[in-house]
Image (tube, rainbow, N blue to C red; front, side, top):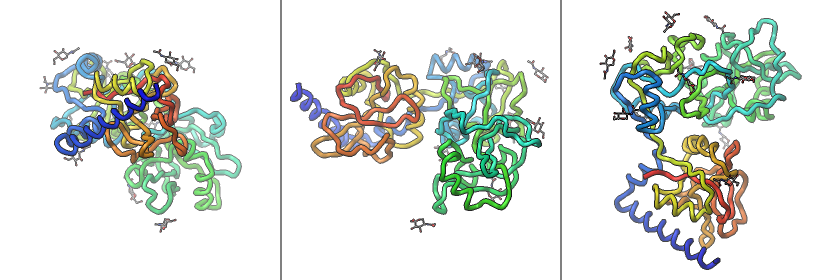
Length: 392
Ligand SMILES: *[C@@H]1O[C@H](CO)[C@@H](O)[C@H](O)[C@H]1NC(C)=O
Ligand SMILES: *[C@@H]1O[C@H](CO)[C@@H](O)[C@H](O)[C@H]1NC(C)=O
Ligand SMILES: *[C@@H]1O[C@H](CO)[C@@H](O)[C@H](O)[C@H]1NC(C)=O
Ligand SMILES: *[C@@H]1O[C@H](CO)[C@@H](O)[C@H](O)[C@H]1NC(C)=O
Ligand SMILES: *[C@@H]1O[C@H](CO)[C@@H](O)[C@H](O)[C@H]1NC(C)=O
Ligand SMILES: *[C@@H]1O[C@H](CO)[C@@H](O)[C@H](O)[C@H]1NC(C)=O
Ligand SMILES: *[C@@H]1O[C@H](CO)[C@@H](O)[C@H](O)[C@H]1NC(C)=O
Ligand SMILES: *[C@@H]1O[C@H](CO)[C@@H](O)[C@H](O)[C@H]1NC(C)=O
Ligand SMILES: *[C@@H]1O[C@H](CO)[C@@H](O)[C@H](O)[C@H]1NC(C)=O
Ligand SMILES: *[C@@H]1O[C@H](CO)[C@@H](O)[C@H](O)[C@H]1NC(C)=O
Ligand SMILES: *[C@@H]1O[C@H](CO)[C@@H](O)[C@H](O)[C@H]1NC(C)=O
């Protein structure tokens, strides 16, 4: 049994090496095509209502287009020369609003201790944006009208000045504050570990003027949902045109002649539209890692590899639908050489391990946790999990 497994492992390594040489010689672009592009956008130049467009995309591709971040938005725009309006896969379900963090990829997880629903000041109307108050003991989140102007906290991913959080002492409405942070930094401060932790307190303490103040953080709630059920929080509304509460304009479109910014229209209007086509498939069957590898190579392309945080976020949405607690990735530990590699031959540069994976044992492979925050962990490769294949 053990020898068999070792044998298979050897073969796995050989296949990988062969592929690698092939890639180097002739298929470099091809390899990149599969691994860099988890999905494609398609512009369909036919006039259809939103629901017809949804049906068309679901039959011929995966679904109406969803957009994770500004990079996706740029790819979507680049997929056509058209300069008109086109449906995207977002509609207003008219149901409950749900909270989102502004920074793409930060999942909103409700923590009642972070909130003080009754903590509004007398001049603050209730609303759909989140702010923090700095007033000695009171550091809770409160939902107030997005129209109020106040200071705000930006998050800088690049750590330009060795800092990630900035208190901006200009008074702005929430959407203006978001634009400011996205243009000059990365986004509004997002996620409880950004706004709730000591780091945040330290930043604020360093800057705090001698008085009480409120500041926006990247929290908003709306009732817009993606057609495929993803809970991507990215919104790119054109604030000059878009009014959230227009009750009969409940389907979202991109305005290609206004930098692709979004507005909404009546769903039975006929417009061209964008579909997306997924190059990934979640196989909801339990297999060992090796079985999963051969299943993918036989029926699709390969077990999925993840080379950046954008891909991690895109794949997370799939992993949520698994019926096993973990989902196999094409991540493998080589006992002989003592390092982790992707079976598609990418080096493991981007990492998202749950904890330090030291003292690595043999017969270990990498899997993603179905539960948030969807970290990777090493698992004995004879465990049986769902898995994700990249398609041909
Ligand atoms: C879609 O409708 C617009 C405006 O009504 C029209 O200009 C355009 O030619 C139509 N496109 C197609 C492919 O029918
Ligand atoms: C799928 O595409 C074909 C060819 O473009 C088209 O005829 C068909 O109507 C599409 N399916 C739906 C449900 O619209
Ligand atoms: C879209 O096209 C522009 C201009 O051609 C280019 O600068 C940009 O990098 C492209 N975006 C993506 C995501 O490929
Ligand atoms: C953009 O296109 C819309 C029609 O889709 C048109 O009404 C509007 O004037 C255009 N704006 C610009 C700046 O071209
Ligand atoms: C909007 O989306 C929801 C959920 O997908 C759907 O039930 C509803 O019919 C959609 N609205 C329109 C106008 O298509
Ligand atoms: C809205 O929220 C309430 C309370 O949380 C819940 O009972 C109701 O089912 C929700 N409605 C929809 C359409 O999700
Ligand atoms: C925000 O202000 C605009 C005009 O300044 C107004 O039309 C809108 O109703 C206000 N929204 C809220 C939620 O108060
Ligand atoms: C950031 O911190 C590092 C090490 O702590 C230091 O070497 C560097 O000069 C700092 N950069 C700036 C812009 O302060
Ligand atoms: C970026 O910051 C500068 C300087 O504070 C400011 O003038 C500008 O308006 C900001 N950009 C945006 C898009 O808000
Ligand atoms: C949507 O609302 C606008 C303004 O209230 C109205 O002019 C239009 O006729 C409405 N459309 C439909 C389809 O009800
Ligand atoms: C896969 O295994 C999990 C337990 O790890 C189980 O709950 C699930 O039902 C299994 N799925 C299938 C398709 O057998």
